Amino acid sequence: MTSSPSPTHLSLILLALSLCMLANAASDSPNIVLVIADDMGYSDLGSYGGEIETPQLDALAENGLRFTNFYVNNMCWPTRASLLTGLYPKSALADGSASRGFHPDLTTLPEALKTAGYSTFMSGKWHLSDPTKPNGPSAPHKRGFDRAYSTYWGTSDFFAPVDLYLNGENRDHEWKNNPDFYYTDSITDYALTFLKDHNAQAKDDPFFLYVAYNAAHWPLHAKPEDIEPYKGRYSMGWDVLREQRYERMVDLGIINPAWQLSPRHPDVPAWKEEAHKEWQERRMEVYAAQITCMDRNISRIIDHLKANGEYENTLFIYQQDNGGCHVEYNPDRTGSWTRPFTTDGKRTPIIPGNLPSVMPGPQSSWQSYGYGWANASNTPFRLFKQHDHEGGTRSPLIMTWPDGIKSELKGSLANEVCHVIDLMPTLVEIAGGQPVTQKPLPTEGQSFSSILNGDKGTYSPHDALFWAHSKGKAIRVGDWKLVSENKRQWELYNLNDDPTELSDLAQKMPEKARALEKQHTQWVKRTDLSKKQ
Image 1 (cartoon, rainbow, N blue to C red):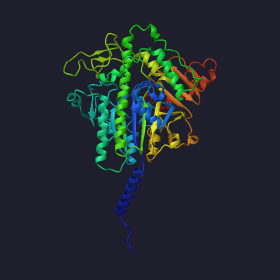
Image 2 (spheres, helix red, strand yellow; image 1 turned 180 degrees about the vertical axis):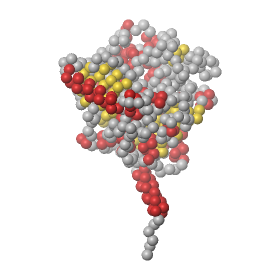
Image 3 (cartoon, one colour; image 1 turned 90 degrees about the vertical axis):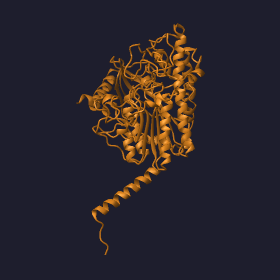
Image 4 (spheres, rainbow, N blue to C red; image 1 turned 90 degrees about the horizontal axis):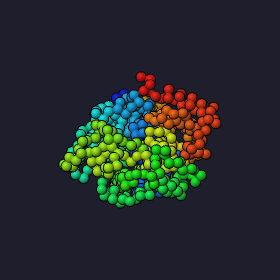
């Protein structure tokens, strides 16, 4: 007669079975690489109508899916908060601001993937915790990432970041000992180090790699060899550039030819009237150089995946965090992220502000590309970062997965309406993890993995999508969108008929506007935890 196993023995058996099941599930799951770029417009990439040289991202688009109705939040940290939690931003962070970090009770995307058997790595801009506390409770290595090479401020000196850390340990020697240091390259260097170390350990577990480039966020810092090919490229000015991009977008099918190109923003002069053409051209040249450098670095990651036989079963994702940024910075716009002098040994004074007498590009400058070029980046839409009109919240989304996306879908467009809050539930489902039940509020996002399977008919869009941050607030229900700019009166648009938001229907349809406003007010009360403390 065989005796029954003891409770301790039984617990060990169950644990072994659980670990075995987890290992088997993980071995069948794809690697996930998620790349996010900073402060770029909807039309910047070649595969979305732009003239900026992005051959690697264009190749990914040709072999994957391009989403044309993917929404983000209107600024950097709100989009990152939603991406990593599946929640609207003011539900995800402890007091509705980046400096306080995540609410302690919620689960982040890397934490969820770790429970599904993933190794997790992060390289680049974090912007989701107190930058003065690199080992605080919401630092990346404290919220699910096994290894994290990060900056914490929202902006960085590309030649010598002031807040460079590896799992909370200062890494200033990276730029002090390297005269060729450039942050975009360094982000990729560490991403590849993490992957190579993972390969060397010969683990069967898949990995999640989050690559958060600062490009093309202000300041306009780029290497001379990256700027050189763009010299003279923008002599036609922003008016002609917008028209050229619009035509390419139509040719690519990104937009319908029935769409109207929004008018030039009222704060942007006609190009022929611009007084500082040479300086303005240089601003766009440096911006484009930053993006092409990022694309080249993405190629390095792709090359590594292919060389190690991992590319076919890697879900590779690219998105942006918000629309192009219009802000014209004054010389007094400095902070803890800036330096008084260059770090090349020459101690050249760093001159902040958008001054036409200073050509951007080197570390000694600290400029942005301003209204005119941001207006072009956001073609065909209105407005910019910080606003919840389409120009501030519509982003490219490219998803490539050779083993997972049906071959007949590769190179095609996905027109379903999705939001950055949907990425976490989508990736957790693809990874084979358990759906995350967030606290203190439930997950707002929903999986759109069926789109990758070709089962578009089974995807149900959100009943409503919401925004409320900085200079904007909005709600989208079906084709109807109610939106306000900088606390002004609500505007009402039917995005099916008027996707560039040119014909305000609020006065003609006041009952519709009031109903959507009421729904938005109820959402704010339900989700803005910062107002409940």
